[in-house]
Length: 259
Image 1 (cartoon, rainbow, N blue to C red):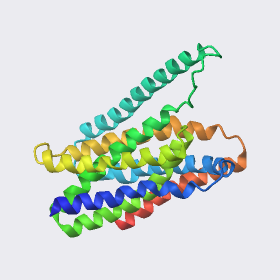
Image 2 (cartoon, one colour; image 1 turned 180 degrees about the vertical axis):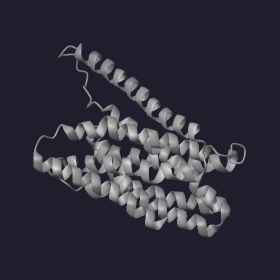
Image 3 (cartoon, rainbow, N blue to C red; image 1 turned 90 degrees about the horizontal axis):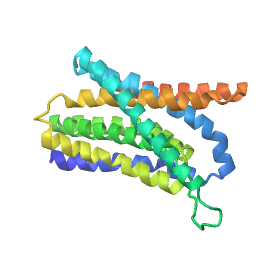
Image 4 (spheres, helix red, strand yellow; image 1 turned 180 degrees about the horizontal axis):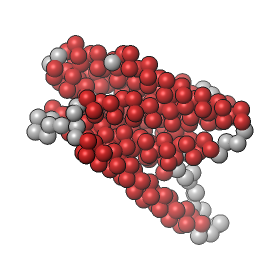
């Protein structure tokens, strides 16, 4: 029964990723006016998630300080190397199109910013860990599984809104942003499956994965999003961006009341 409860709960949580559908009715101009606010919200949510939820969770698990530090650094470095690779591929692809003759008839597709792939990778890993956590909770008791699912569900709402905004910002179409955000959410099923299959063999893997995810989220916020916010020079918009970041962090604090 624990498996049925777990996978049913994860399916319900995964549909939160479709919350971006509420933004589909907005016109392009209106969407662009709020994009800088959503990027600020995303930066705050990612930093808040890392420092308020993931890192404290690792400490509660009693992970060794050295392993904890290495896992966070590994997350930062892996995301750095992944972004380097994606930027290199992005540059090579652009160079190929640059040398195409104007009359070649080849369609030049809209380029996708590597940030979008990073967001999907990071969110997928985060959801993988969430799936394992939900599975572990249901293994303890159905009541704990239900409360954990509710906490994850509420936790995912601001996160998925921010992810949808970031995918749009990275060049995804609205339909593709919804689709890939949903696919990323389904990695929670893999996390749950992995826990049921090998969780007992590799005990203690969840806090390491959580620390690695925290490092990845810190990298995305600090290396990609905050520099993007610095491009805004207008004092009023800068103040609104700071407010959006504080709202993102504040939402993560509020969720502590539900845990």
